[in-house]
Length: 393
Ligand code: NDP
Image 1: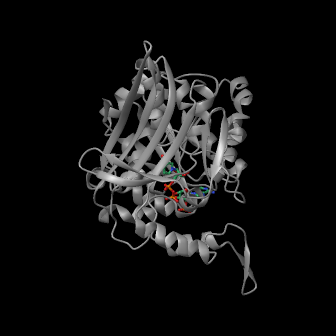
Image 2: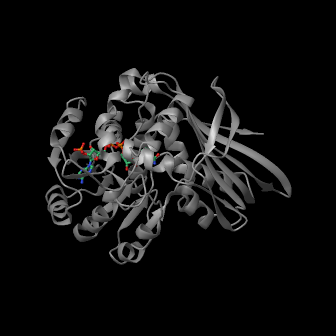
C-alpha cells in the first residue's frame, strides 16, 4: 500500500513535512523533496535517517514541473512552496495526472488578497480528470477547519458563532522575526481586518480590534488582534448557519512596534520602487534582511495554542465549546529540527496526504478540509504529534 510523494518547497514547513512523511513508511514509501534551491532539500534529507530523493524545480514553470512529475511519478504532490505557486502547481498536477495538496490559498504576487475563487475555479477540471485537490491542509487553515467540522458533527445542531484564536506564546530572542515566510506573514498582518457578520463581510483598519483572551496550559491572558484569515471564507460557505466568524492572533508589543515603524517607512510595500537604477520590492528586500524562519528552531522557547471557540445550539440548548492544540517549540525542535509554527503546519500537511493516500478522504474535484469526515483526521492528530483537547464552557 505504500505510495510515492513529491514535496515541493524546502523551507521551514517543507522540512517538517519531509520528517513527518519519513516517520510513516507504511504510507509514504518513497519520498522526493524538490525546491528552487536543491541544496536546501539535501540539507533536510541529511537530517532524516531514511533515503529522501531531492530535485531542483522552479514551481512557477509548468512544463518544468510536469517533467519532474512525469519522472518521479508520485501519487500526490504536497505543495509547501509559497501561495504564489498554487495555480502553476495545480496546472502541472492536472497535466501529469497527480493529486494535489497545499497549506495556503493562492495569492497574486502584486495584491495581498486571500481568496479561494482562483482555486475553486479548478473544481471541474480536477473532477473531469478524476483527480483530487485538497486545499489548506496546514493548521490555520487546516486543523481549524477540521475542528469546526468536528464540532458541527458531534456537538452542535447549528453553529452560530466561530472564533478561531491563534496564540504563539513562544520567544525566539530576536528583536523582530516572523515565524513563517516573512513576506507572506507581513502581507497577512498588514492587510485590513475582515470578519463575517449576519451574512456580510465587514472590514476594519489593520490590527485595530483587539481583546484579551485567557489561554490554557499555563499560557495565561494575552492580547489578541482581529485579522482576516482565508479559512473564514470556506467555513461560512460550508456551514451556512454561522452568523459571525472571526479570526484572532496574538502579537507581542515588540513585534507590533517594529511592524509599525517598518510600515511607516515603507519597508512593507509590495509594489516595486526604483533604487539605484533597479526596481526593488521593499518587502522582498526586508525578507532578505530578516532571520530565516527555519533558523528560529533552535532558539524558540514556549508554547503555541491554536483553537476554535464555537457557540451554537444542541438539542435546543445554547452551548459553547472550545477545541484546541498546545504545541511546545522546544519539543518540536527535538523531534524534527523546527519550531512549532512550521511543525503545526507540516504535520497536518502530512496527515492530509495520508488521508488521501489511504482512501479515508477521497473525492474528485477541489475540496476544503471541512467538506471531509473530520473523525479520521482528528484521530491522526493525536497519533502524529498534535494532540487536541476540548472543553464545554
Ligand atoms: P519558506 O519561505 O520557509 O519556504 C518556502 C520554500 O518554497 C523555500 O524553500 C523556497 O525555495 C520554495 N520556493 C519558493 N518559490 C519557489 C518556486 N518558484 N519554485 C520552487 N520552490 C520555491 O516558507 P514556509 O515553509 O514558512 O511556508 C511554506 C508554505 O506554508 C507557505 O505557503 C505558507 O503560506 C504556508 N503556511 C501555512 C500555514 C497554515 O497553518 N496553513 C502556516 C504557515 C505557513 P528557496 O528557499 O530556494 O527560495
